Image 1 (cartoon, one colour):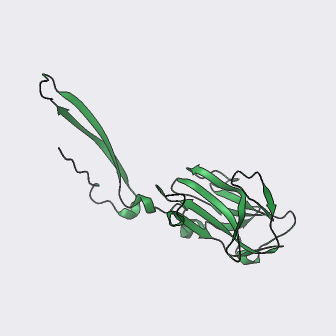
Image 2 (cartoon, rainbow, N blue to C red):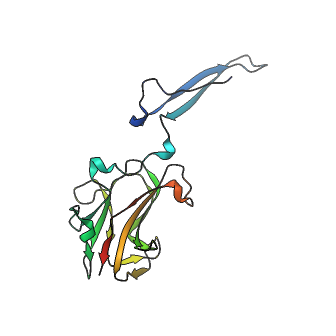
Image 3 (tube, rainbow, N blue to C red):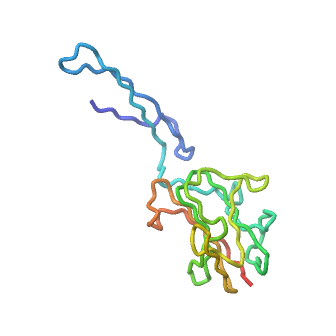
Length: 191
């Protein structure tokens, strides 16, 4: 027996529908006097689940974005200067769970300097409230962490940098850069 399951008609791919149900059947094996009952669940997704955007679309939320320490989104992030104890935030919101989410600081030459504070999350399934808003964030300071566990802090030399936010697509390979949705912030200054 072959069973084909198709998405219900009328669904738009942009609506990202999940659908499912059960197939019930009775089977009588050779030599049996009674039928056996079977229930097989199925689930499907209308579209390409592997390429769903992880981050909330910028046009509806303004995120990802650089913000001041009070969560006010910066209108001109290129004017951001981090010095002394000053910090800023990289705010983001996710719409689809991701197995790996990382926020790093990248030099103007493209070299990853390290992880931002709270810049590595595994199995991020939802946005955590940061203050009164349902967003997540990482801390931008004049130091970063050389490891994702945030055990070794490293000072960042003065210069121009940007933040990079990466989220692994569903079923993606963590070792393949093409399997991540990536967002780079405008450059800012570490003084």
